[in-house]
Image (cartoon, rainbow, N blue to C red):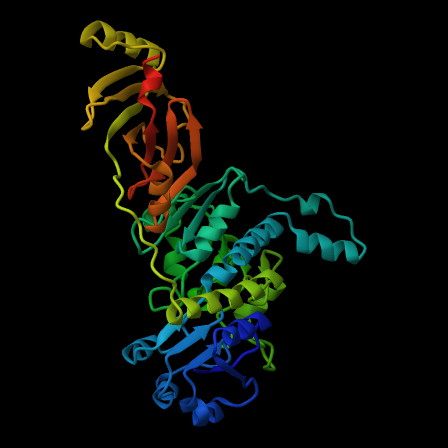
Amino acid sequence: MKILQLDSNHPILTERLIQLGFEVEDDFLSTKNEIEQIIANYDGIIIRSRFKIDLLFLEKATRLKFIGRVGAGLENIDKEFAEEKGIHLIAAPEGNRNAVGEHTLGMILALFNKLKKADLEIRSGYWKREDNRGIELEGKTIGLIGYGNMGKAFAKKLKGFDVEVLCYDIKEGVGDENCQQISLAELQEKTDVLSIHTPQNELSYKMVNSTFINQFKKPFYLINTARGSAVETIDLVDALKSGKILGVCLDVLEYEKSSFENFFDTDSLPEPFQYLIESDKVLLSPHVAGWTVESHLKLAETIADKIEAIYFPKPTKTIPELKRATGIGGLFFKAENPDQLKNWYRNHLGFDTDEYGCTFWWNDNNHQNASTHWSPFKKDTTYFEPCKKDFMFNYRVENLKLLLENLKEEGVIIVGKIEETEYGNFGWILDLEGNKIELWEPVDTAFLS
């Protein structure tokens, strides 16, 4: 199979493709029209953002089997027509998500601490300490719109900053231990810092406009490291002037070319952008959030891995039949006064309580002793975190390690690592609604000693 590489990438991508047996050719200079004349000779394309792969181009690519886009989005490709032709569309958001997460965090910290302003002043001979007094991220509510690869990477970076992280996404059930999924209305009510992590599509196009901005209860800061088309710049400037938006970090701009290359190639700049340039409430970078030394390599490796998985799939791992939950191992819940409650259950319902609660004994299917535990916890316990509910179920399982491996492959969120104790092995997961579930591979005999 012949592959045409239309943009320069990390050399590891070419090396990997050749190792897999592909014939790889590069053409970084020919025009789109010139490429269209030869594209029928190729089975695959590797591209970043050089030009759009539209319907006319795809009609001429009669042999094309896949398009590898060395980046996160596929907006420059006519996805619908490509899929009709059975062409694999391969993107690599996993390759630069960490870079985007770090860049997003770096931008808001730099804005909060006025680092650009302070640096420029010192270089000009000014030493203004009070004028450069910053604000802290701690205690703020960070709202994310879009909770895919990039949003999750940013939320992970926010751990340890003592902030509340909330997200809104059109997909259900995307929240995890780092971020609580809520409605858009609730996000607009609570947010202090809004970060955009949406793909470019009809829903996100000019999403951040005056109507959207004015629906926020509090003045807020805005970060956009996704796509410039998500923000109506003239409305953003109006909100900056009125104080509804307190500051903004933009790695992407509405006025960018679709190729994301040179921006300053005209004699005049749009008036709203001129305001952004001159405002000390604004921090700008040239669409480089995912553009690091490390992501350069990771993006190439991700594309190579995905192409290999399609054309040289590894044998499917045989997963042995596995019993999952075999019974309820425990019911744990928060109580105002656990000791008094245990005494009440002892006196009125005959519970045989101890310092932990009460153990109920029964026989399993193999006629072996098995136990279920009833345990009240203190109201301020952190044992149920990241879930905010006042209860947690414990389920008995037979092979905890293998079960957790299978659950991870199925996309279930795993919380923490397996803990081994004299009472058995413990692991934790989150269910579809974010409830923390404890899985217990028991040693029942430990309770009989």
